[in-house]
Length: 140
Image 1 (cartoon, rainbow, N blue to C red):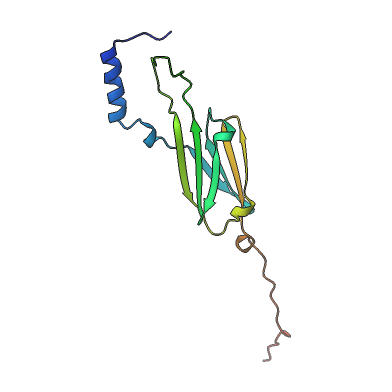
Image 2: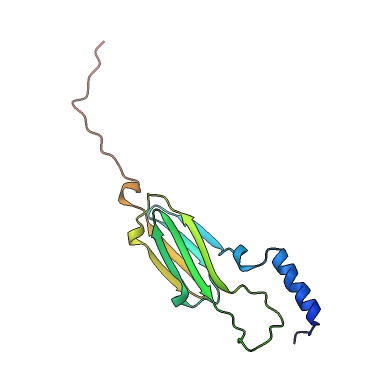
């Protein structure tokens, strides 16, 4: 059970949170990224988000992730402690033109969004054949 504090202490704590930048505007969606010879992979931590509230878009080589987490506290309740961020979150990442964003795939499982963006055909490693004429012979 949480201890109840006075209204002035609650107000002071709220003001400190706002002054210290712990409001929603400073909340960043944590991400990891890696690539192999076939694709770029991104994972975003989105715990407590409903899949239907998550949106991924690409435009002009920019990936935009938008998600929303509603407050679990009923509107008629008096909050005692509110530390988890709620509201709308946005994360933008610049993407290389070496990626085929039209073929991107995403999956959401256990609060983690995983995105796979294949490399474009022109960006994949390829072997170049070498042709030539008859080998020259050296004479002494």
